[in-house]
Length: 75
Image 1 (tube, rainbow, N blue to C red):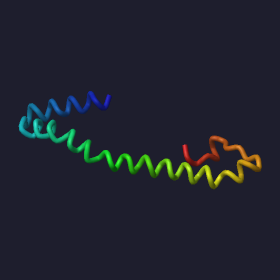
Image 2: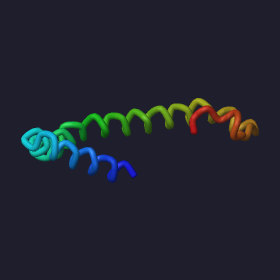
Image 3: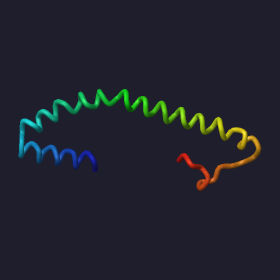
């Protein structure tokens, strides 16, 4: 659905201001490439926090605590 909305918005921009639409078409892959390192950092930090959560909850898990859907803060 997001792709359809983006396509319709780009078509509308093409009708209203075609140079801006072509510029957006050229710059979009460049912006995507620039954002890749930030996505990788986000994935890394998410994995780090999940590991820390598992590490901190390990003693409780060894003592028999079982997470329930309401007590598990990180979904």
